[in-house]
Amino acid sequence: MVLPFDDAYFMKKALEEANLAFEKGEVPIGAVIVTQDRIIARAHNLTEQLNDVTAHAEMQAITSAANFLGGKYLNNCVLYVTLEPCQMCAGALYWSQISKIVFAAKDPKRGFKAMGAKLHPKTEVLGGLLENEASVLLKRFFIQKRNLN
Amino acid sequence: MVLPFDDAYFMKKALEEANLAFEKGEVPIGAVIVTQDRIIARAHNLTEQLNDVTAHAEMQAITSAANFLGGKYLNNCVLYVTLEPCQMCAGALYWSQISKIVFAAKDPKRGFKAMGAKLHPKTEVLGGLLENEASVLLKRFFIQKRNLN
Image 1: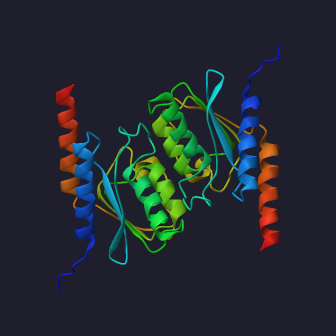
Image 2: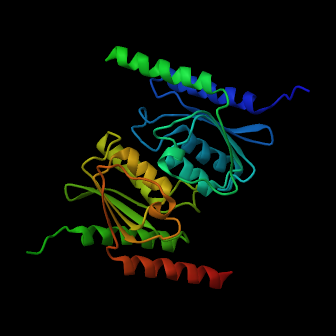
Image 3: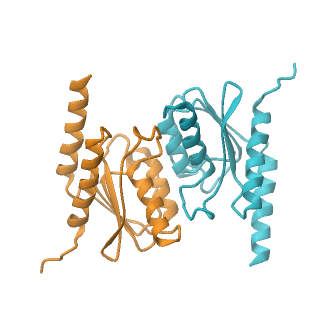
């Protein structure tokens, strides 16, 4: 059976957001939040444009999803994000009590796992989905940036 | 010599912000960010009013200070906050490369130290300043909340 909406489908939507960040000269990371097969928040990294270290894709998506739902808890939601969340985003996800996090590329230096931050015990985590697509985009960004400087 | 602006002076300003949160029915936590003896950001917890787990006093203060400075790094700034930052706020402070963090009450359950989150190696930390004032306000809030339910 082919599921119309599976994890890969939504991760591709997060990758579309990452591409929007890339086009703006932002580190290309994108995220979507889904509940009941419906995307309720889309966001991409805007730290440069907004001059704000808190403007990670996940943070904006959490705020946006809570705004859509009219409540601050994301118990029945899944976050799809193209890079493993950092400790700030993991901390926000902890408070949100989100059901599930699916990330693409791993971040062995600044990811929440390496940094020691904790998710909520209720939160399920799946890493490495479409990892290659997300990593290639990130590598292309940093190579381009080096060549411009 | 009496310094006109010392750590206690600015922590009292953060406590004023915490009082504003209290009056709004928010968990009473306040923060200010200071550079060269000047307050460039004031904020208090607004998670209930905004329905947003990311609306901690520190997060708003970081965004506000960066906006004031026109840059996202807070290298020459000090954060005064009435409760030990959580891992989300510690993560944001990590990215901001803030010079110094002064907090009042300790949070042995959800503070960044207990949760395992890390600050930037450049960031100096001082905990426990006016701890009693901050703790009393928090206790009063939770007692009042219990009595109303």
